[in-house]
Each structure stands twice: as structure tokens, then as C-alpha cells.
Length: 169
Image 1 (cartoon, rainbow, N blue to C red):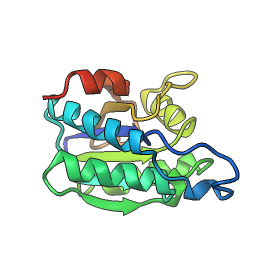
Image 2: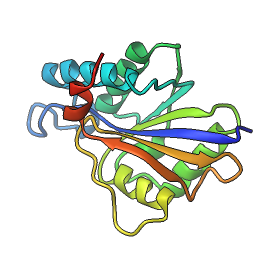
Image 3: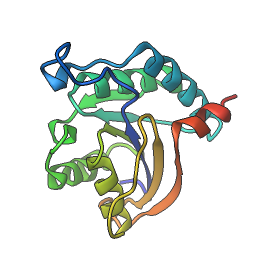
Image 4: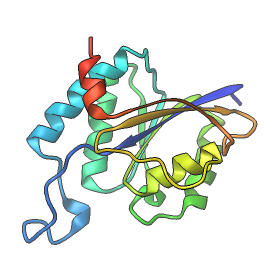
């Protein structure tokens, strides 16, 4: 088990609007602008020397596509896995169980999901009241003790997508 775990929480990039074109919310794709902007954000992550071994994503199309863009852009060939509990309204207890399981084999993990669930997860891991707000495409880095991957953790940084795009190499 790793002494320290870096857990990155990533909200999916900008997706198509809900409506008659996507009666099944699970199928809404990223917009072309969302794809372009998130690719630029990933370049910004490189400025923080982010390394990922594992990217775990919600099974919804917009989150899965965001995770694929992250994996392709960050380098190092991180493994991609899907976790139903990261879908909107998923059980936080299942996400926390998964973090514990994944932390036994990886020390640099990203979870790609949705609001308000990611904000609630971040607050839970920081032992904070309320939630942490994630804009679409925002990324947060938490440092967790490998012996206690469910927190309390330390917030290393939280950046909205606009800031990530500005610091790209």
C-alpha cells in the first residue's frame, strides 16, 4: 500500500444540453467546445507534473469521454475503469470502498464524475461541511494517507478549467 495517495477529482467537460436530442441523459456527449477546452486543461495539468496510474470514470458517455481525453493527454498510459457508483446519485459508500480498493494498487488515481456528487465526495474526504463546487472540467488534487484512503485528506489544489487552460505549457 502506498504511503501517500494523490486522488484527483475531475468533473466531466462541457456536454450537450439536456433535451429532446438526448432523451436518455446517460447518452449526452461532450460538445466539440468541451472536447477542445478539456484537452487544453489537460495540458495545464502537465504543468503540475500530474502522473496517473488509474482513471476511474462514471459510465455516462460525457464522463467516459472526459476520462479518455485525460488518459490520452496526460501520458504514462493510465488504466481506465468504469464505476457505476460514480454515476449521478451513486452511493458514496461504494465510491469510498472503491478508493480503498484502488489505493492498494495505485497511488495516483483520478475519479471522473458529476456534480453535486464530486463536491460532496471532496467535502467528505476533507472532513468538511457542505460541498466543494466543481465547474465542468475542473480538477481537484487531494492527498490521502495510504493507510486511511477515505480521509481525512489534504487539499493540495482545486482549479477551474479556465485556470488550467491559462497555465498549459
